[in-house]
Image 1: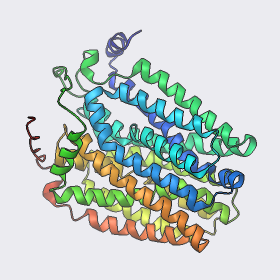
Image 2 (image 1 turned 30 degrees about the vertical axis):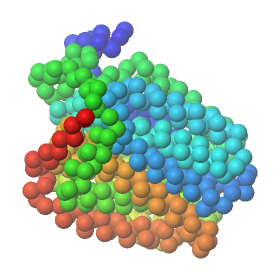
Image 3 (image 1 turned 90 degrees about the vertical axis):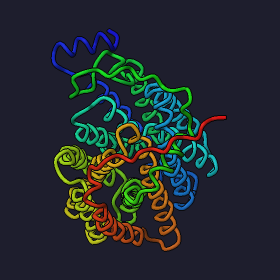
Image 4 (image 1 turned 60 degrees about the vertical axis):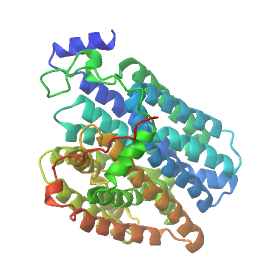
Length: 435
């Protein structure tokens, strides 16, 4: 059954094919989240086998986070030009290549090249921009909910993969864990080939919640990577962009770069084994699934500035509380609940503010640059926390700094004016005419 026949079959049962696209995207983002999160679990086995210092491994992860974010606006351009399916399939092939080649690495520069550059570029092409594109193209309503669902895939990836990766690595070695991730990426590739379509018009439908199907959109041959720079030029003239960029920088510095990368080694410093620490991460993922989906629902109904104020404020307080948990079961469970509920709950309100301020057509491009700020923050925290552990023999200064930055973000987001909550989109400046 091809996608058009499946879409018609589902339509007769009042099910929009957009939900199939959401499911396929969810699976893809879930398994790539496993690839992104794996190094945090495998850091200790790498140190044990090769004798690499925390700062050395963190430098590779910092490169990965940086490229993961910087690829986002260009991934949006590639998606707009070549379609989601082609771009995602290319990304999955790149990630699998980097992981398989890493099975034979023996030097730090190989770690930087494969886990930093290759996997950073590949995962950057399947980052949150993909979810934003699906939500804006396939859904005229329920965009906040869809964004929350797809954002939650990262948390689900941790919930599914990290404890399993920690167990497999402990029992059979880190290479076996890598092979397991590659197998999951293969499953996502098959699903993407069979089910993903770029636009509702490809299967003869209108976006969910819209009565009439728009005319099929053909990518313009004149669109190139320079389009991402035009989007940045126009967006950077507004204060809203810089507030969203700065707060998302802090978001990355307090999530991916810090907790996802260094939480397991931090717990090891306090006597908690890797499998137990990965279990706490899984609990965070469980709470974040609920928190992010709820955030998407709330972002369709309430002032997104105040949602972000509470998300950043509560996250900051939870990070400041972490060193005082004593790393006991009760203390870490309490941390996992409060921190997990808003791990990436910040994404749906940030996307909604971006769409409201910069328009539906340019949302994925502008959000790509905002997401680049997120990953710059992640790279900053990944390297900074590793450096703190190497130089000061403690991760705790990095966690205190990150918590304080979250409180700054909470105050900063309120500076977005009331008129910017859903005002007119920024009108793009025309690109210079070609000679």
